[in-house]
Amino acid sequence: MIINTGGRTDIVQYYTKWLLKRFEEGYVYSRNPLFPSKVTRYELTPDKVDCVVFCSKNYKPILSYIRHINDRFHTYFYYTITAYGKDVEPGVPSIEESMDTLIELSQLVGKQKVAWRYDPILLTEKYTIQTHLETFENMAKRLSPYVERCIFSFVEMYKKLEYNMPELVSLTDKDKQQLAKGLGKIAAKYGLYIQTCGTNGDFQQYGIHPSGCMTLKILGEASSIVFRELKHKGMRQGCHCIESRDIGAYDTCMNGCKYCYANKRPEKAFENFQYHDPESPLLLGYLKDTDMVKSGLQKSFLVKDVVCGQLEFEMEEKNETDYQ
Image (cartoon, rainbow, N blue to C red; front, side):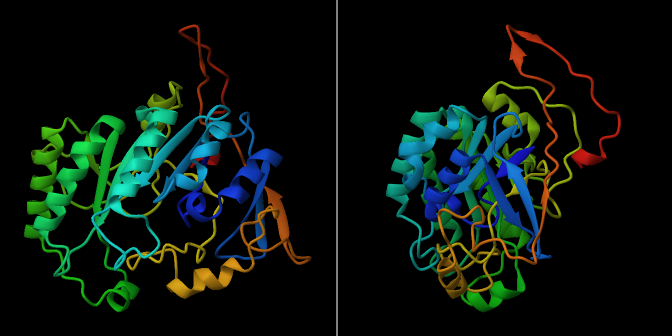
């Protein structure tokens, strides 16, 4: 099973103390966002978790403690650094500070475990195609020695995005082609592996690899482990990632990014923070008498760890529905 710490919120940025406590105690509760009275318990132990996946815009709060997790678990780290400033990402550190932190993270865990996310790409009068390409090149030049790959996507026009960012300029197919061509050229210049994330469109002619940023192949090669060959259902339309279990909660990220899909409104995250207790097994609040708690199905995707260069295979059930 894959544990995801960054799909619903930026746990690393704002809830590191809670996350470390969860790993220390060896379990976590996750409330179902669609059925709030349903709570799942996941064991956070190496024998139950194949890989811990992180996704954050600021790893600084966890750098001093990252080895406590990385030494016990197979891990992978997605670091999002974009061209935007405080006008779009109010709670995110500057580009220079973010790059410094990424380099430090890479030196601690190894570049094979770090991917740089440059997404979503959106256009305004300030953030033009030229601005993106110039910023991307400056970043690629510095970051390419410290990351395994770069992942980008074009912004999806959610309804609330029209309200949150009225300054958005619609991305045309021509814009996407121009951006993809430029990104591909820059990536090739610095020897950077570049791919899309859930983006409709084929840009392979520009040296850009297809979608699938959290696959068992990527996670396995990063930690030198071997996964079973399982179908990647994806997390949403156009996504080719392996299914994971997210331990975060929506409406809790205080980065305030205008394009965010995980917050109904920026203020809601700050309102919810008052219900956070680093000692609670839940990210927000505590268990209620009306809650129904069940243990999550935590079957391994692993074939088995490589031992002395040989693979030892386990007998597996033929029915793989539990893995889908």
